[in-house]
Image 1 (cartoon, helix red, strand yellow):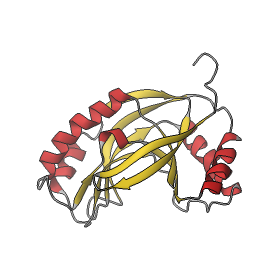
Image 2 (cartoon, one colour):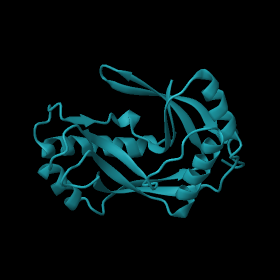
Image 3 (cartoon, helix red, strand yellow):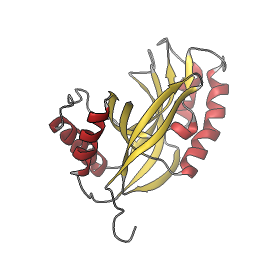
Image 4 (tube, one colour):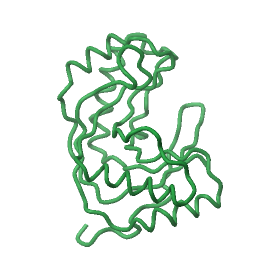
Length: 193
């Protein structure tokens, strides 16, 4: 199965991003262009580690490795601002930013170390938390999206508390990817939560 480790978003954040995507589509121009692949709001998540295609045995290994991470200190995430990867001149991804302080980076590092110990290659790029809104097939300037990034540079789409993360399965289909939670970590919710 195609898999990744991520934080899920609460529905109010998804709804806010979905409303904004309507404006983004209009600003981008060519709203039906095959060059822009819009993330479905129900599929927007904060990836900690992309695993790619893994076997049933690897699912067991990943689940065991992530289970050993155990509890972590809950923290808050704010969805704020917009930007491009790698940059606005030749964008491949248009994203909403994520602010969470060091605790999110520490959790991502713990996930990375646990999965490296389970045989997965470590990520070579630095962790840059974000929510992918649009994938751009041909990297060329997107003036409408650039204008939105300037306009909403400091806008916030809300905050949410994080006390768990998930192993997700991604199934690719004709209308885009669909996602299924395979396992939750830590396996039992924190006391009082």
